[in-house]
Image 1 (cartoon, one colour):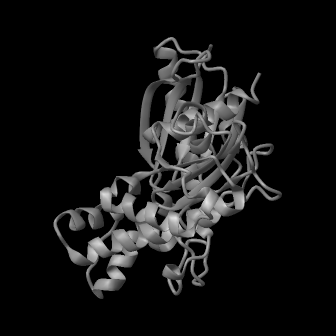
Image 2 (cartoon, helix red, strand yellow):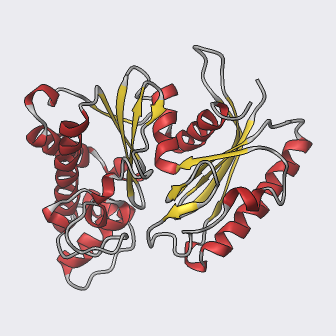
Length: 314
């Protein structure tokens, strides 16, 4: 089976690889993986241009290695319209991203067919097909990185909802987030601005009244060194997120929950608090649904983008 050229467009980086999906029972093959910084602060137009340049470079590389891709699969930040290739909604994590015409842009550098889904949908598809959710029929996927996203995968297919907004896990209400500005513009209390990687830093800086850490990795390192404030931030944010995931489970009734992303590497305290919060919030019949760590790492959205594209591109 021919490879698909894939891209994962996030707030921090744009990753790319050629993905060969297997026959049943085998594992996907990820080839020539590379990444570039997104440079989101430069604006959506600049990000689009960087994507075009990256795609051109990857296609040149494919020729050098004898790879003939049959199409392009994209996992994009924001809410993309899979039919038209337009980004129809985006938060301030990628300023100017809303309204970008991705298919139109890529068709300036290639005639290959292109199919795009949201990055968290792609992540969920990858884990559902080949990772920690492959035994689940109804899977809730939660991605905790720069922001927080989610996806609902039913029988191997993503559930998008009426407006393409299903799975926006980061914008579930949490008392911990009240008064903290979310990337969507509200301060009414969403979980993302206090439990994402960015949110861990925000919460730590609020509680230390002057200290300035820049990301969740710095908070986790401080916690590992015994910083009591950092430890409380790790535990409190994970517990609050677990409560939110329990509420989502009560609504969806999944048989599998997969949690992935950079923040899941924050350590045992984070996972313990997450699971405690989940069990406190979930209804009795759902308390034993396991919260599994994703197995595919950073390859999950690339593999999921290939899955989505393969289902559409002939």
